[in-house]
Image 1 (cartoon, rainbow over the protein chains, first blue to last red):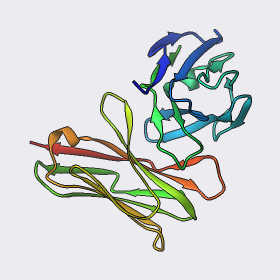
Image 2 (image 1 turned 30 degrees about the vertical axis):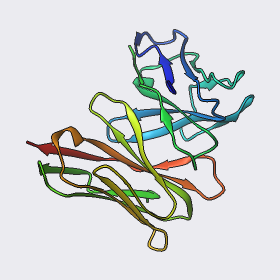
Image 3 (image 1 turned 45 degrees about the vertical axis):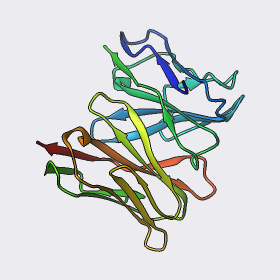
Length: 113
Length: 109
């Protein structure tokens, strides 16, 4: 089954404790991205990747890192999480850029205390 | 000013009503997406279109490139259509999508 998976689905952590949210797709997609969704603000892009070893900042990259060592995986790293990073996070992928159907992961609800 | 504007922000209707959600954008685009986010949070792609009209079941999406406007219609609406509907545009020569704020639709039985 074609899908984007994210783990964990829910996470409660404390300020400053490094964490990684994994994202994996099985569709051989080149384009992957991370979004955060906050009430009243809609989806905001954090980082995106056009292909392996190619990543770029989105609209709200501060406090986040990503890597794209393999085509299928695109982990999101919070080196030192802060409470303002409490949010719902989505990973998405598509064949190439935005002119292709977008496939979303189920979301990760992160709470930073 | 947001580059992608959706209207209305909130819409409540009775089961069976014909629903229209609008999306306007201010720049040249190569494609426009309509997506649905259910109360549980999951986001699914409904349509991607660059011209004309697409239909899938009771959902119809249209786009007018000259007027920079798209509409999503739901015929014979049902409570299970209750969700947030999101419009996003792919700008010409850009690798990012620009997102609308979403329209929250509630269909009452």
